[in-house]
Amino acid sequence: MKFLKRQKKFPGRLIVHIGDHKAGSSTIQRALGRGDVTLKDGTICYPLVEDMWHHNGLQPSLRAEMRTGGPPKMHLDRFRQLSMIARKENADVTILSAEALEYIDKSRLLEKIEKTFGATPDQIQFVTYLRPHFERFQSTLAERIKIGWLPWDIRSHYADNFDEFPGKLILYADRLAAARNALGDSYIVRPMVRRELHDGDLLTDFFACTLGPDRISFTDTTRANESLSIQDLMRLHVMHHALPELSKHQHLALGWALSSLFPVSGPANETPARLQLPKEMAERTHKTCLEDARRVDVEWFDGRKIMEDALDRAVEKAPTETQSLFPEDWLSSEEIRTIRAFAKSLGELADGTGRWITQIDRITTRAQLS
Image (cartoon, rainbow, N blue to C red; front, side, top):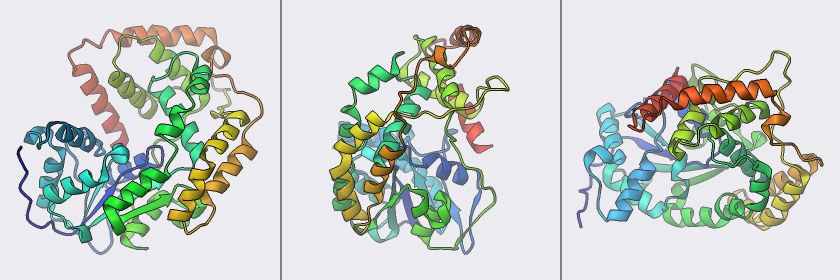
């Protein structure tokens, strides 16, 4: 087994943002990638490689190492690549952001960072933002529609597979406790609830909690990854199902590209509606996640009922009627035919060589950083 030699001590501080998914990661990544963030009394490094605007490539890099028992080759080891960039810049603060690290074993993550970056525990700060349970469920459903990972009958799928969401996505307490055991006091968990954020703003909160208040200035206040209307989600749903030959990764890349660079525009008189799961699902989530919410409130938020109250509000606000999730109930038959025709033309570009998906990824990156 090969072991990676530990680097010389890392200069400055290292902040590692590790999710969660659907909790504002794109906003943090876009602001840093665009250079919209300035440290008033120092310098910030947000290292990027290969047309990326985030560091989610760290997750497959570490998983590959865990499978093989040794570090990957240099061109596959994102940790070493980013470490080299950060050392060259020699900034006061280096920031990594990868929501894909949400489910990675945190003890292995810490070990890898210490070895590749040469940072000591007192230099590293790990941060997780936690979205309330029902909001995470609903937002994840919208995301899976956007990236084409759901069957045509969406409602039957999420109702029949509800247990997948608590088991893998919205039961937080055990996962957070394991992270604390691995990372100790260097681990911060923040609620993704507007009234709990510094100045009601995610970016302000992120830097206030990691660097202290009033140390950052912003040159742009644009927030990334705005929620799509249900009409736009249905347009993407039609598009994905007209392209069955694409791989899962290709669907993901296409969904991100279309939603971030080419927002699908409906008729001028269209009133955008938001995806809303019915009260039945809110009540089911409440029953399943209540004890988890109480544990999180006690263990992370000083017993304040942040997550529990969010579950209660979700039940109160959810509509009693069930919203249709079939495209034909939101789009005209003519528009559906047009989308399918466009998808067929687009599908002809997917030649199986990988060049198509690489170009789509680059388009998305340029859109996020422009």
